[in-house]
Structure formats: structure tokens, C-alpha cells
Amino acid sequence: MALDTSADNPIPVRTVLNLVGGWIGRLGRVWVEGQITELNRRGGTVFLTLRDPAANISVRVVGARGIFENPAVVDGARVVIHAKPDFYVNRGSFSLTAIEVRAVGVGELLARLEQLKRVLSAEGLFRPERKRPLPFLPGTIGLVCGRDSAAERDVLENARRRWPAVAFRVETVAVQGSHAVGEVVEALRRLDADPAVEVIIITRGGGSLEDLLPFSDETMVRAVAAARTPVVSAIGHEQDAPLLDLVADHRASTPTDAAKRVVPDVREQQAMIRQLRDRGRRSVTGRIERELTWLNGVRSRPALADPVREVERKHEQVLATRDRARRALAVALDRAEDRLTHTRARLTALSPAATLARGYAIVQRPDGTVLRAAEDLETGETLWVRLPDGRRSVTVDPLDPDSGGL
Image (tube, rainbow, N blue to C red):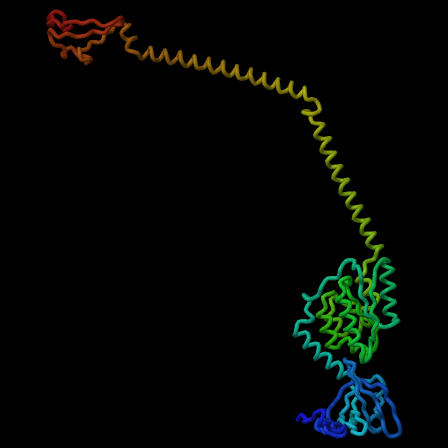
């Protein structure tokens, strides 16, 4: 409950501290995880500082010497402490009184990392489609590394050996211990905010599982996932696999490998340019030679080699064609004349005029009816007799008995 106080009605310091102690006392015993620093054994009591694994926060811990007899409990060790919160009113200080201490073993650390890995993977932070390609030749490379570390030298020396003009912006941070996560994340954010930085390398030179724990911290993994700039992870060696390797856009097995992945080798690029130039020259030369061969072939054709001869040849062809046409036309006319003569002869042979020329005549009535029998004649009837040289009218006389019917 809030106290009813004012400038005119203050309360003593002892009252405030007693209330704070009462509130802390109601917290009860808790299990706390952290990293041991400033371990000090004095007589039968052990004093130490327990730092948070990720944040820059610590608390004093006091306990009996027998509780800390475990050989694994040393400076830098990661432990779980069962403790009772205590607030000393006389000094206004807070501490934890240790009841039990357990060193966090490698198996337990691996189990926690595996659980965190499953959670982050379910959120899609490790998906391949999230990975961004590295720029071919970055203008400025951001480097997050330890102070005066071999990893820094490896990256800088190999990168400048491959491309002497490469530029770096180096952020030196703590790469292990309780401050590592915060410093690395802050350096990553500064580099990511710099528009000149086109790729970021986070590196350190290997170490034990405990040393590499900051690079599996959830805060750092999420910071890398949220970065807009491509990130290359170069933590430790091939056998080291912190979660940072899974979320980074590219993983390098060593700091040297990171330099090779990010910076192209100027000698290799020059050799590639020479090869491409030679291929281009061969391609152009081959094309020119093919076109020259085609041009020479065209020029060697008769139409271009001797144009007049081609015209003469065509003139001869025209004359020959004309002569063949004349001969064909003459033959056709001769054959047509022969056919006409034969047809005229056949018509003459079949014509009634030819029969009349042989002494025959055609007898017709005035209406044009042809008489074919003598009994069809009537006495006194006027008939037309057609002779070869024309027609004449005749009259039918009575039949003469002595004529024999003629």
C-alpha cells in the first residue's frame, strides 16, 4: 500500500528500509541463473557477484563455504543458485543468501540451446528464403570483433590481401562474458544504421561452449534477424555451431573464410576478365572470318565475278527460248492446218451437196418436207427440186403407163 507522506509529513529512513525489507522478504526462496564473477572466499563464508548472462546486471551473493566446494564453481562459471533474498536495513543493501549451488553442465546447456533453436525455427528465423545475397564488391564492410583479437587480424589481412582498396568499419566489443551480448547487439545496430556499410561480419576465434554462449543468445539472434544489412557469421571453427550461424545470411567456418566470402580476389577477377576478353576476341574473330568467307563466296559467284557473261548467257537463253517457241508454233499451225483439211474433206464427203453433184436431186414440198417415195406425189402438185446449182419449181404430171412407174 502507498504511504501517506508529504513534505510536511515525512517518514524516517528506517521506516522506508523496514518496509522494503518486508516486501523483499515476502518474495521467498528463488532459483537464479547467472555467471560467477569476483569470487572471494574468506574464512567460512564465500562472497561473489552473480551476473546476468545477457544484460549488464549483477547481484551480490553470500553463502557458507561448504555450499561452494564444487570444483566447477569458479570465476566465469555458469551456475544456478537456490537463494533467499535479503535486505540489510542497517546498510540499505540487497543480496542473496545462497542455500544450494549447481553448476550448469554442458548437457543442460545443450538442451536449453536445442529448445531455443526449436522455438526460433518455428518462428521462421532460420528459413533459407530469408537469406540475402552478399554484394559482389562492398564499398564498406562492418566488422564486429574482440579487441586486438586474432580474428580481427585474420579478416583485415586476408580481405586487404584479396582486394587492397577494401574499406572497413571496425566495432571492437567483448566477445564473451556477461557484457558480450549487449555490446555485440549495440555494435550491430550502429553498423546496420550506417548506409555506407553493405555487409556486416560478426567474428571471434572459437572457444568452449560456455565461451560461445553469447552467440546463441536469443537477443542477439533476433537482432541479427531484424538487421537490414546482410550479416556473415564467423564464430569459431567448423565444429562450432552457435545459433548465430543459423540466422545469419551466410556462415563462414573461420574468420579467414569470412574474408574470402565477402571480398573477391582481385587476381581471380583479373584472370576472369582476361578469360572473358579472350573468349570475346575469339568470338568476334570467328564471326569476322565467317563473314569474310561468306563474302568471298558471294564475290566468286558468276553473277558478280563476270556480270556481262551472265547477261550474255541469259540472252542466249532468251534466243533459244524464242526459237523453240517459233518452232513449236509452226508445228502447231501445221498440225492445225492438216486437221482443218481433213475436217473439210470429211465435211465435203458427208455433205448433201456432194451427193447432188453426182446427179442426185432433193424434192421438197413448199413447206420444206422432203419427199422420199413416188407414191407420196400428187398430180398437179407444185414441188421444189434442189439441184447442185440451185432450186427449181416443178409440177407433177400424171403417171405415164409406159414409163414403168418412172
